[in-house]
Image 1 (tube, rainbow, N blue to C red):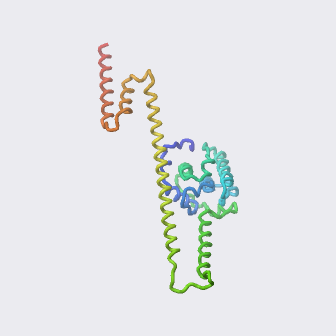
Image 2 (cartoon, helix red, strand yellow):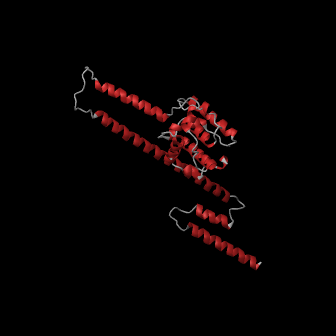
Image 3 (cartoon, helix red, strand yellow):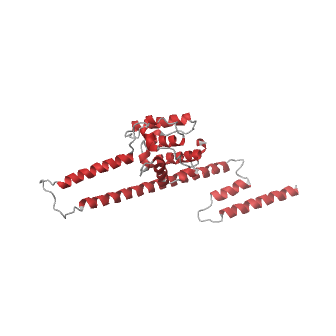
Length: 272
């Protein structure tokens, strides 16, 4: 089943936002970028949701920080694939680099697989937080971010109450620097996300272009076989392949040529 999901399957045209929404809703997470799933922990838990009890969650490290830790998670995932006889090779070396496109493609495949098993219906009895606790690693990146943010706010608050001379700031005076800095950070993050989306779109379009170009090249090679190149249908195909960009009637011309050739063949057959 999994091996039948080709690169031009509709699964690979599912967008980044839909994938993130799917992950966050199913696993009660708060991921904002595809790269945050590069550790392999999310993929392991998605398989745990799809095939309850098959994934040894105590081996999954949701706090993985290094490529070495990531690789251990993918080893768990590959073992699960082998156990379920899923013929899918995991390109670990690419995924651990946290490149958006590589991870998006794998998550697109994973969503397609999970949907094919459960029909896209979530298991209401599945408790993702409890399952993450099975390994004693309840924290995920979303909660870590919140913790760091809280610590940062407390630190800023403490530094604001006492200035370098030990004096408290005068009441009524509000520092605009931090507000401006916050807005700038938000703008930068928004632009960064937009750039990532554009890069993903370009990469997907290039992949689609290369796919269809390879198909056309295969057809061209077939048409150049000596025994076939003079056949009417082959000549008609080449008329379409080699038509100039501005020529809109290539298909009509090819159809007319083929019809004429077929009619001529029938007349010759009748005369014989």
